[in-house]
Length: 64
Image (cartoon, rainbow, N blue to C red):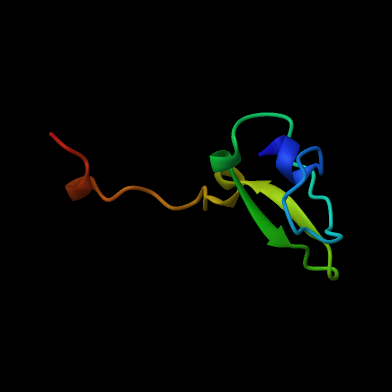
């Protein structure tokens, strides 16, 4: 995926496209590609950073 998004692999019939840099750490599944709140640019956000850290697991959901 890194080579494809970086433009290293050419696709047949492909025109000009925007290069997308992938995160250096982890895998693609560790991230969400989302629009920055300040404009039209996009960024990779680690999904762990999106978790509400104030939310707790209800006791009935924890196996005994």
